[in-house]
Length: 52
Length: 237
Image 1 (cartoon, rainbow over the protein chains, first blue to last red):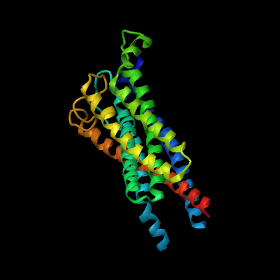
Image 2 (tube, rainbow over the protein chains, first blue to last red):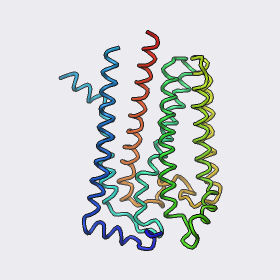
Image 3 (cartoon, rainbow over the protein chains, first blue to last red):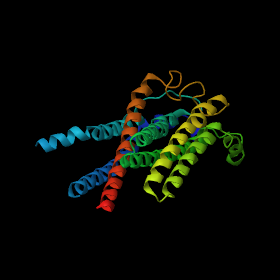
Image 4 (tube, rainbow over the protein chains, first blue to last red):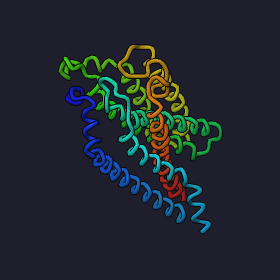
């Protein structure tokens, strides 16, 4: 309920001091890692499809 | 060069999915959202939690279409398609459930009661029970399919069961939760789709987010399909 009590002031603080970009950077790195993994899997499977 | 071109021509939707997901994260966290009581900044979960369920519904729909294709043509590859799309659909459903549990515990829990007591009210949520029933029916699909050894029998029985499972989605997640009172939004109509629920600004992020997550899950499903087709080929040769 901490979030509820402080309201959207958290959102305003996060945006005004630029900390929200840190969160975005972290999520983007995770997303990039997952997608790179998927691309690698895709390429590997394509290779096997050509071999068989 | 032509090979390279056809590669992009065949996989443009994967690139689209990546672009849309990156856009979702950036715009989803930065663009303004309406300041609603109790929800506040958590409204941004709309771009993630709701998209999981939408992706699940679309994957289950693709799965049942392939099951019907199998029953019409008896081609073995359609059985594999149906199974893998259902599996990834279940994964998206579990993710939707887990994200919903976190979101719920911060927005539905009664501030005057400790969490343990308000859990009693939360556990009676028709939407939660409906979604749990739908997922359990799909778990049963996997159990049923993987417990039959004979290939043709397995494909035929699980295709028929898949149609029943899809039919059960209608009452359990689309009809019953809308009849009963619930804390979950989207009582009158489709959650997040009607104009009362979200502002035009949120639509700008929500639609791309929904398409991006769906394409990502379809991508994973196609990878699984190709892998099991390869396995099948190896077994045959």
